[in-house]
Length: 309
Picture: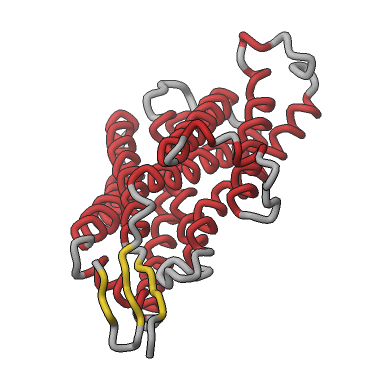
């Protein structure tokens, strides 16, 4: 819809990035943080089964996210041109993002492959220093991937709601939360000594991360509500417009409030057998809220285009 604003701006809801890009941003952040948290615990000497499951889940999530990005292109068969075109702009965020995603995938695979029985023949399978090196490099690129999912839309200067330094921070926090939730889902069904304790720790950590996310998200909305007219219109869409059910019901209630109540009100106090199912439920809700957050942010993108005075 086209609106002529009294402040001499055309306001247009962006029509290009929709559900597939939202899934790409969601899975990219989730996958990178699943790996990052798994690697952190591996460095602390905690069960190798966790790092294997987390690494594989992270690689698969990022891979599916990249597939969503490719499918969103008008000509998916031309995706290779992102890295191979003779007119390639090495300073573009598209090239930077593609390079970071590729590097994360490569080094994460090099790190986790020797831990799988089918790949014990790899030359570095017994070289702990090489495995640690690959793990650290993948960890650093994982952080970059999670940040990139917010930077990608944050640099769109004519969408004021996106064009703010806090948006990449929100996406980073949300990526960490969904990464922790994914690990809870991966570990909760395992009936081994010590795993239940790790699951509780992960769930409790996710609870504190969600509290931070809720605070930062609230401050972001308040600050942008005093921003340019495009940002104000976006806030109106989120809180009072057609996006309100998705934001209030999907992000705030389903993705944050209910999981927080389950984690701090019940999950960390419940007995082992019951906490398993409650932890899985709260983790699923966190994932739903994380995906919905990306969708709402994208759909709330209002282009602010100057017109004649």
